[in-house]
Image (cartoon, rainbow, N blue to C red; front, side, top):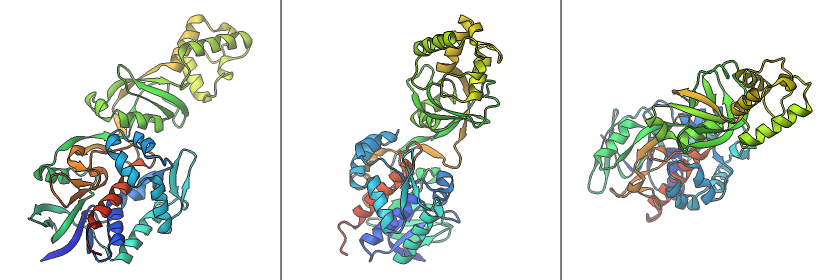
Length: 408
């Protein structure tokens, strides 16, 4: 038996739910279904932001917002003029969810719980009569003259409009190649660096504002850097991994990372500062007198790396030791040997080629009535609520495109 719908959305994640809710709010007469292959919907929403759900980011100007997207910057400019972060806040407020801004610009529900967002979506779909069907693994998609037929492991569905919001799903990407779409080969984005180095060996949990650079490359970033038991993480590292996703994949995640622990201070400035400190504090113990706003344990470790013993006085630091210390502080070289996924917030660079999408409607340029939203497209962002904003914007535009010319 074939079940008929006006709109079928494949993928029960953020983009899928947002699309479905907006479609029926725009036109309550439409019969809409969400097909999810897993047992649960919105699983990525649940784990995002450490279980708090980083809904969006407090960046309200479209031309500024696009700069957080290593892939999709140019294409998202128009969509963000249609639906931006401010619209997201307003949308959730209308649906009973108040958001708050944290110091770094990330926005969360005031409850600090992703369940608030999940409950909001589940309540809306129930109220609007949207069918949410789990355990529906799509096996094939057939395009008729003016309809789509979707076969899952459980049953068959027929619809006028088909929306794909399946995220980084290789099986669905492969199906879309059958429709003539090109797939930009996926590589990981947002990952941390595996580094085994005595300088950071016992410093798990220590963090500093640093600038980082991939040696012999143009890749660089800055921000909080966190030392972990496997190497280095934190926003600065994640930013670098996002912008360098393709280049670092070609390097097979083997490269030299240059770290300036003092962020924007250069070698000469720091050398001058330390020479002055040496003169003015000659009798003080170097390990107990760190002249920078800097983690004490890291300072002690870099002193050892510069062959300065813990009980050395500033007066006894040699010229070579001082130069070595400045090098450690402003240009520490660390060998990266592999990567680790950042928590559960795995993001992939890759997906449907953006040249094949009409960004005024999020519709396929190859097939009318086939739409895409979210990470199924070759769009990804750095951490901070930006990937969700792409999902909300895409879902909103798809919903408007689907309902714009239909009688209500």
